[in-house]
Image 1 (cartoon, rainbow, N blue to C red):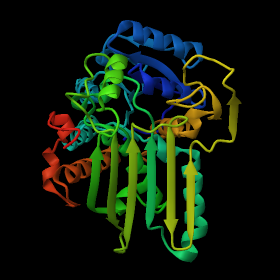
Image 2 (cartoon, rainbow, N blue to C red):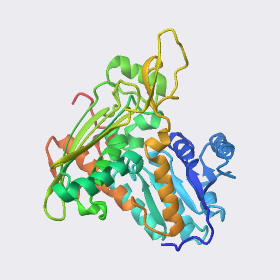
Image 3 (cartoon, rainbow, N blue to C red):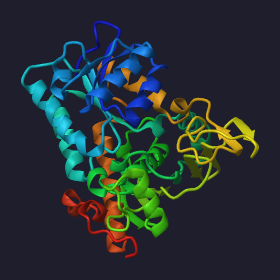
Image 4 (cartoon, one colour):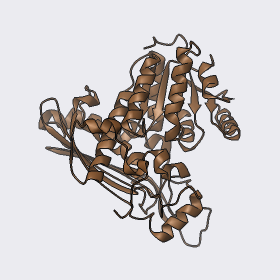
Length: 419
């Protein structure tokens, strides 16, 4: 792992120019000691527009590169954030590994958005490549860094656990009306449906809350997984037609659906043999004000709870007030009238700002981040166990060697919405 940087500023290159890349751009406004120095996107207009946004926010100077290799080899780039579609990340990591092994570039670290891979084989390959290149690595799980999560965990483990014992149950739910771009809805490109897309958040933030502050997440051993998946809304003819019209002909849920609802239960043992349970629920079929994240942590004599839509700010607009459809109040906003919650700082509330600040400092100082590629691979193992449980209709005992080569039915193209 690299030593501490001789100079103060970490120069970051972003791979991707879409939804997630722009969320990080918003977050970096609140990050010290960092510069958005470069961007690559396969579409020239998109990367030029992203560079212009970074420069307008005074996060640059940011240069648009015409290849992953050119960005990685540039002496102006110290670290890379992988923020593109799921089906591009392994190829980009291979390009990073190849470029560094050829002696080009001076990268210190790579941070990757969730999930680390579309299956366990991909996730483990990502770990092998980043460590083979000798790079520091961070897994970008924003909910772990959400201020409510960090503060709530600190209080529970400082005040509740010493007197009453460790927590034993964490519940996490994330729900909204559906993703922004067509590739999210395509099982082969995304790796699955809502379980892959969103339960990666839920299982990891829950596992984090259950883990002692002075231990890694691997101090909890996964022993079983049980899940149910379903397509509750988007395979209905009227909604499938609506989805196809919005996303284009590549998304046809009458023929190639993905699950829009998932429920999972994971059982762990701690180092003393005590049991801990994670309950997770995710949905693309939620109708409400917008993205809703709900978290609970329960122990013998205490509990904590968080709901992202219980914001301190709300507005009311009567039916006499019209307006454009948009997401200016909350992500995945579902209405423009009535009593509406407003998130004053979405990037901060969801944890992106603290996450990026943490990764920047870890890469600058040459220390291991709180979340690494190893944690990302463990998350994918949990997801694959849940998918396999849902496919087989039974609880999966862990460890399970079958998961090393397992791909979910949605990714294989064999999933049926009603079967």
